[in-house]
Length: 348
Image (tube, rainbow, N blue to C red):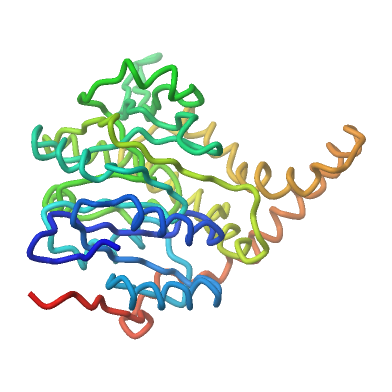
């Protein structure tokens, strides 16, 4: 077990909910199994089910990390900011609760930041199973493209993720540490003062494109973003979803949270209504269709019947999702709603 000591740690890990609870235990255990670099850890628990809440409380006592729990679901940036408020180290690493790390992952992120002066460092992030084999993000590009058409200005979001879906074994030998324009929040290291300089993470972005906004904001202040391929992690995404995952998943990927995020991004960066933005709005809710409805229908043998049922369930899902999220009170983050299990650090 890693013994965290504030006198040695340069970095605080802030673990936050991604979209479900059913992989949180494996994720946390991988951190303590594979991390030798000294670290502090702040765990944000936004209304997890009872069995996970009890597990986290036990682990916080045993391993000495700081556990913050709310009795309402949190947006990703809301959770990250709660953790950021506890950080006193030079660096912060935001880690989603469905990420598995590999030996040496943190050492190489910190080394990259120290040697380059980077404001942000992203690892080689993989996806799915088998673990650490399929690339999810190997750096990329973010920004705003400006085009002039028929006397009007078109402002569109740039988001390009490099090598997604390719095999690690094929691509990694050619990778080198280098500057990049994009890092994703599945796992990312940042200088704490760089995050503070941009005012923390924008909670107006409730569930989508917060990593793009973050990277653009960092670059606006002159901060450099680096890709460090010697650090390897995997984002293990749904499905399968368990029944205890569904309430949070429905809120996390709700139409309302996503539309609010896209409209906020539009207003913040003065985006054009047509093009990228209109395409994103047209696809709102696609994650629930792909990861809730389609897995539910996978055993229906006749394709035509399966398609008909999918269309019907999409309509039901839209209405149900609207009803479930109508009275969301997630912004009522009063101090008394947060329960803390503080870390018990060894005596200096």
